[in-house]
Length: 130
Image (cartoon, rainbow, N blue to C red; front, side):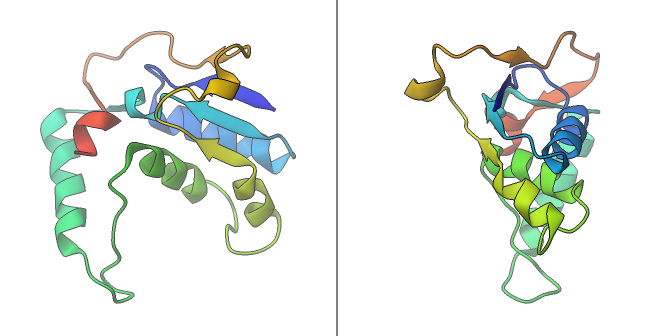
């Protein structure tokens, strides 16, 4: 099991790494999902998220979008898996757990740090998931 600290990690890079490795059979725990960053201008990113959320609804054409930060990270990972409804992708998706904070059982564990340097333009997921 690999434990990743998501502080200052770029969402797309983190999601692609976790998706690729989980397809190989690895289990992942991602901590501090609210501190993962999305690159781009705040105005564009918040505008897109608000537009998607305002659609809302219960039909197939207007799905409900996730508001929690760990849900946003998990959804990004799911989008990079080949078939998350059946087969290999479903098994890989079950091996991924996301948390906003650090649970007691993972406080003393060795963590992989994902974010090394911040880009110039970014927004943290906790600002979007209000």
